[in-house]
Image 1 (cartoon, one colour):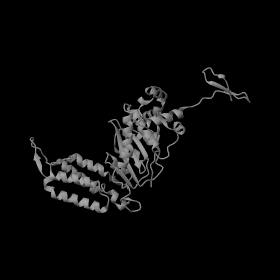
Image 2 (cartoon, helix red, strand yellow):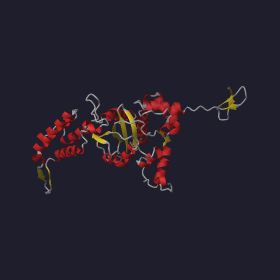
Image 3 (cartoon, helix red, strand yellow):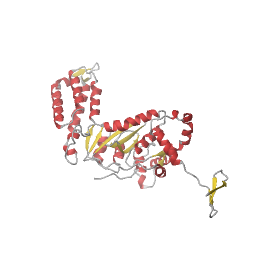
Image 4 (cartoon, one colour):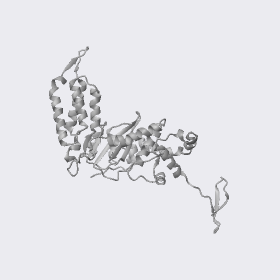
Length: 371
């Protein structure tokens, strides 16, 4: 091929020296541009450090913001799944499921944590043996409906923070100081003997301070209220977790497929530190480095980060030819919000752009795993 002038639009024309056929080749640099865009987006590198304060880069990569990577169905089975949500103010939350190895299994964009939002996330996963959560709204209901045989483990660190929120770090009463110390010991329970000892100490605390917790106070308006309402909240919380068996699931042999508790030196599924430290923390750091972005751009950033840290992410050319754009997602949600004769949409409820079921319906498979 030899150069043969230019077209009326200025594109170089090429001519074959053997057959005299001519053509104007158009080189698609979108993949290269997207690669540069993701290298900047997924690293805490502000635009101000780029040449010219990043104005040229911002103009060249403006179209990249329209692409949203969809969460694929999880290709692997894991015995333990950690779930948590990262909030973007009060407008949106991204629910994330992860496994050992710091791999993201699935994610889901929603307006808030509720049963339907969690169900949309759980449908993308294979049912595990244990799921570790922080007690978010609606998760227990969603897990009971979709994963009835899965054991729930409440993150022990979140339980401790719930206790600390009621007692403060410097309780004034002896009962408050003792229950705060029990909360700290909860983080060190690693064996069945530790568990039995902790439960005995807690039951002893309940018995010794039974009358103390039953004290009441009459307010000026004549209303009678518990004197130690905060400590009562702590007792009710722990009683509820113990009754449901959600606090020491990781030390229950029946929760594991082989009926054996992992060794102490192994990573016991007692806390959500895996998802808090390996996923949420880098995401918050990334959003802070790129602070000033709109809600849409922050959601796009989180989705891209989760996609690149998931199992077997596709190469960029394949991504550009398969993933949805923001306009296509908006059109799908508008179609879902308006009644149509299509039976697939008869049961859909209209909502905002970032809902729960419409996004799942349009972007992902409509069935969930069965084991």
